[in-house]
Image (cartoon, rainbow, N blue to C red; front, side):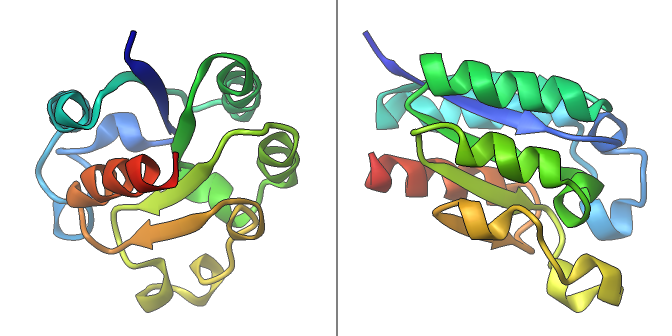
Length: 144
């Protein structure tokens, strides 16, 4: 049986492909999900790919991943800069997690430079557009 990696996406990522393509690229989140599933197969993973605009859903999914997944890849969107709840949820699970962002958050507005998630994940990947997801899958494979 293949291991499962939860790929969780936060607010506004459902608008990818339409929202600020100069920053986030032209791929839709569905396209990125397909890319993740294809990249995960040779690594021996299945991908559970989800998106929500609600912080509590992400918390619930992180807890679920703690029971069911080999790892978590989280694109928290704006919640990455503000959410102590996501920080605490990630601390409560015993599976490796990686934070990702499509854009380089350190080259953008100053309020995006601080991550509430970074202290409780094994690493962060940002600035590589949709490839951030597949890079994170490779990193999870190395970590597990």
